[in-house]
Length: 414
Image 1: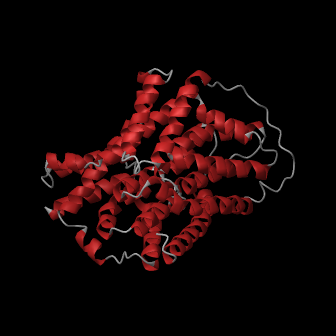
Image 2 (image 1 turned 45 degrees about the horizontal axis):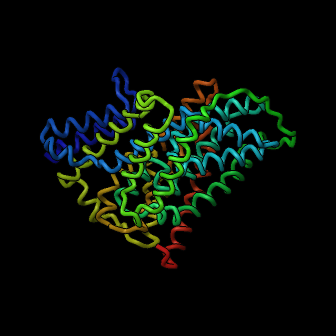
Image 3 (image 1 turned 90 degrees about the horizontal axis):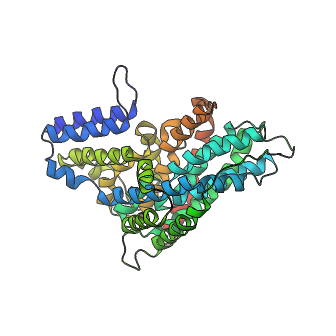
């Protein structure tokens, strides 16, 4: 049974790594789905165990946020924010600064995958309007979305996983990781200016040719306040004895009922394939966990609540996130971190797995989204071009992460 589970696990993760094998119609969700079904079919786990293995708290939080974000997207809220703020810039460096901080802060509270999906066309449009090379700004957007999303539980899928499983309160999570993200965003601005110095050397004043964009202000009167209330309730979830997924689902139900967008249109915008991907991975990881494959790793890996533990998780995250990307890597680490039962290690994983996603194109889903959307708009971001900047940004921000987390630990803040 152990051999069977390991073979299924390996096949599943090969499918996740190599999303387009020759003559095989496979992608990440289908690979995870295959692995989940195979675990049941070959008797590694029962159907009942598979159902229990799915972390419904994570699925519920993702679903709630997806519905809220879908309504805000249809209303034109993201386009309004991006277009109005980015067009205020009057120089190349100022535009870079605004792109980084608007993307970074928005990604902390709106799930970075959704933010980059919606911001990318706007950034390309603004760059073309100002006759600028969009590539430095798009790469900066990717880095900023990952760095900014590290600070909050709602920033990205892996943080949602960590937040739910660690049971760290929303406000505490934000308090500990906020310095890493803010310092990281400031550093990013200056690193991008150095790496793409030729693009930012001009002092010429920017002039944008504004284009008419459509916004549904009538619907925003309901959707935006509901979203704001949901965020506020996240901070007081422990005090009110309300689970974060319940808050997200409540906000989603209210925004469907009170909003002006037809609910069926909103439901179509939910990424059901991503939810299937998560459910499948939960089942696959539970299968190898059940047969004891992870036991030696859990027992022998020196993940202790000290500097060695912080550095160990950062190095492990940097390596494995480039192989399977940060979300599958995080799911794989969940049982190991549960055994360690340390807030310091949970926060280290949240920071490290997210920041490591900037190293290469395949490190995080947000990277792939920007690159695919940009390609559809005629902008090509090359692998080595990205990696050259990505390795520098990742190395510096992960060093910042290790130092800040260790300082917090040394002074008993964690």
